[in-house]
Image (cartoon, rainbow, N blue to C red; front, side, top):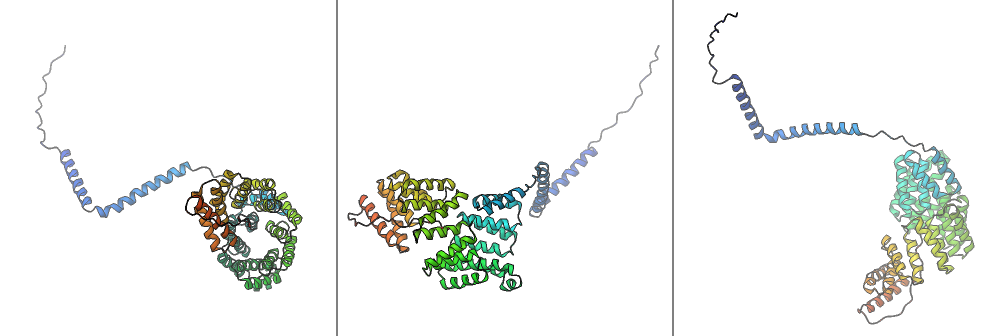
Length: 440
């Protein structure tokens, strides 16, 4: 049995009208509002602070992400085997093969001047003068105090027709190997002679013939076995003194000293072919180059030009031109000569493509413009022919090329008659002048 107890009476506590928590909330809210108003009123002062804070957070986040996703570094390839292969190809005269290998290993041998020197010279031997200039400048970056790289830069600039820059580059090479240094250490004589040779070539290119003669004489006195100096003295004899026998002797001497240098063999072959009509010797020189460098576009063009102009054999010419374009589609001269062969064969549609390609590469050549216009006219497209023939006439006039000028004026007149602009045509021969050579 349970005893029932009465509940104890507890009086009800009276609730507060406003709690402490509510008061605290409104105090904090009011403070936030006041601070917000203050920041807004002075926002120009706070914006840079906030930007810096946000940028810092973003940079930190980016670094974390980049680090977390960074790939494993790839090991640098050992260039030893390729370097041995490149050196072997160079000594064999396989300049094309050697240049390809040197270009591959150059990034792995950034301080090897020999690699950049041969890479530059290899490109020059292949007629790739822009590539040669880049290689020379990479060599200068690797060692800005080596005179041979400045001399090679001058050589590349000479090939590009930038004679004033070539003079500056060759002069810098001479500063790095002064005559006093040669007196102290004769092993530097070849470097100074090389720089003098390319300086003389620059003078020759700008028509300062007497300075070219005196400078090349200094180079040969300093190093009689400088094949670079002998080749350039050959040019002086050929182009200034018109002493072709002396030029032939110089080119032959240079070729004997450096039988693997393609550009020297090309100069020799051209003189044998064009001046002395010794076609057998020229073809033998060309074939020796192609045996070791089958894709040399300068030689392929020269041989095609020989079969076209001398032998009158368009089939054989087309064979070499096809090889030239397959080796390097960017050689304008090979497209141009192919267009000439196609035009003679009355393959006008194909000739138009070839001439247009050549013109697209070099739109300042008067012969390219002429034959492109003439082909348009042969296809009955007089309106398309007129601008090219007009340009050709202008270039011929500026260059004092009387053969091209007469032919361009005549063919332009024909085009204007065909389009109903003129009614009189004065006959004149078609220009069968020199096709463009790619100098070695």
